[in-house]
Length: 172
Image 1 (cartoon, rainbow, N blue to C red):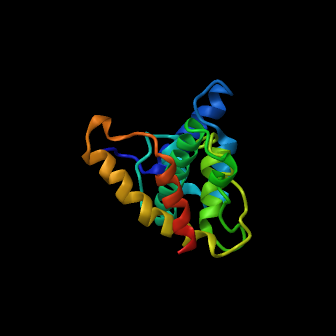
Image 2: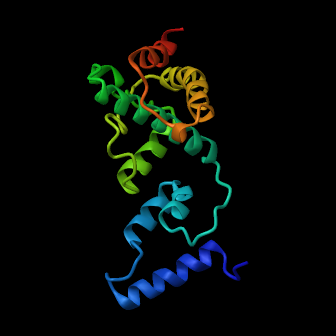
């Protein structure tokens, strides 16, 4: 168990960074942006030496990642079978009312993850988007579990029918 808190670790690393210069492994600008924007949950994503601590956005982070994973799978599957790419583009989260939007922006823009996901930082401009993604997840999750249960590596691309089933869950 470490003798330092995350705050103490960051303070020591920031001091070391200012002493050593730009060649050190931390990005003071990123740390400042994450802390001042309330997205400090991402500090241990970027710097794995920091302990994971509870954060008010933890549920939104976990759900955003699940939604991104689902859309990444939909998009990769659609690309492989030449399915219409436009309908698998991620519409985004409501930038005005949904904390998932800030989480998504942090994951993609600040941490450079899911940058391959078409539409990852879009603003859907509708509070209904999260409800629709949750419906899609309710349909997608059993498909994913069935893939894992079937063996063969536990992962494969979705077929056209499965893509339609997941996307149509938005309409029910």
